[in-house]
Image (cartoon, rainbow, N blue to C red):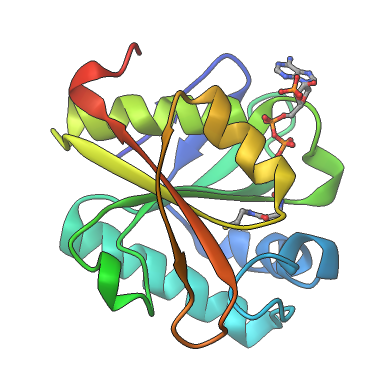
Length: 177
Ligand SMILES: CC(C)(COP(=O)(O)OP(=O)(O)OC[C@H]1O[C@@H](n2cnc3c(N)ncnc32)[C@H](O)[C@@H]1OP(=O)(O)O)[C@@H](O)C(=O)NCCC(=O)NCCS
């Protein structure tokens, strides 16, 4: 069982109890604004997310963690690693990504989970490079990327939605965990 504890968070695999809290996060237009085509996701979509992320854990040995507050046991969102979907240009890369419920923004939780995820990628999974793909204008996400020490790699255009994507990367052999 893959679990990571940080000072305030538990990063773990997904279970059935996560469906309702995840679907509440996915139903918030402000959370979903910069993700995919910006649509909110309903209960069925959220069940599909959990299924897909769990399959990735089984197939790849990494995936998006369910992120829980140690103090309360609440699910606050999803942070972790994935092979970018729908972007053939990046099918050989591993991306770090994050999505927290709005009540949990601005408290350093995304960065805390992301640092633990990079350490997991390097020390546990032995990956040597991780990218982050950010839609231009998503300043909160870019702030997390910057704090992780990731550097600008290249810009590209989403093949389906046409929006500008800014790609950052980090060489994990140089990552100061
Ligand atoms: C992107 C997202 C995860 C960023 O979350 P966040 O809470 O802003 O990010 P952080 O964890 O870095 O916390 C930010 C702020 O918390 C504050 N903070 C409060 N308490 C803190 C603590 N104990 N430790 C660290 N920071 C703390 C800091 O001021 C920090 O801002 P700063 O870096 O400017 O100083 C969040 O906005 C989100 O879920 N957005 C919707 C989904 C999305 O767009 N995902 C990306 C595309 S896939």
